[in-house]
Image 1 (cartoon, rainbow, N blue to C red):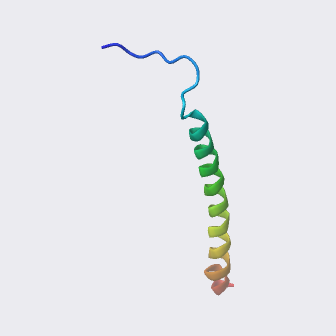
Image 2 (image 1 turned 120 degrees about the vertical axis):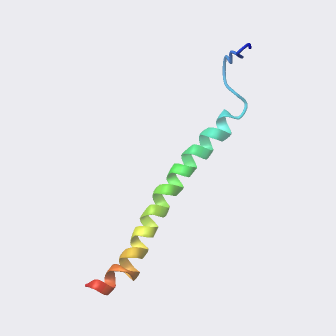
Length: 47
């Protein structure tokens, strides 16, 4: 079996980079939003 040797940039690299970057940003933002919602609606009942 021959393995392909890729030299240079793949055509989907820019799209993949944007997808990874925006997925990480979305995950961080949604974690903060979820924490705020839990703080307002769940934890406020215990104070």
